[in-house]
Image 1 (tube, one colour):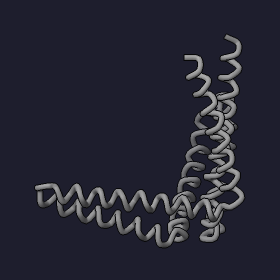
Image 2 (cartoon, helix red, strand yellow):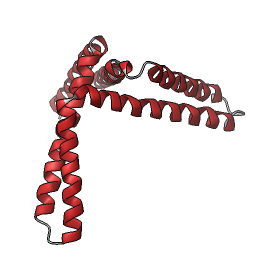
Image 3 (cartoon, helix red, strand yellow):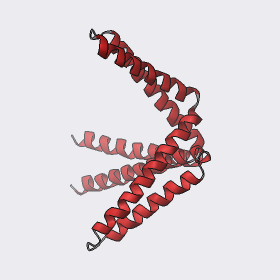
Image 4 (tube, helix red, strand yellow):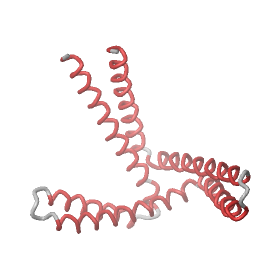
Length: 179
């Protein structure tokens, strides 16, 4: 049991290191990371479309079969388009990110004032302002921001996850030694 626990901790540690390395690579080469992400998304769409088509071909109901086939074909074609032109997919994904950051920022700002008497409401306000500014900065540089925004954001996320896993593994190692 102890060896399995130690092995699990080591796996967490090394997974964290891999995430950190991928995060650094994404931040240093955001266009490559963003394109790679779009290609993966494209293959997911393509596979999902093919599965939907095959599933609908095995269905007896004609009305649902037609709608399902159409949706499957559209999904598969979207996957092919994203694989064939990942930078167009990045531009679209960047627009979605802009919308997300702007809506999230406005929502956090509004909600922060509802919690104004509570301690820490200013942190929520600051987070909302930061999200709003980030969304507007990405929008201001769109479509060029598609070349860096997705890759940088994925890289920062991978860095954070990697650091969290390495820290968790270190804490678990320390706890295991104390027993």
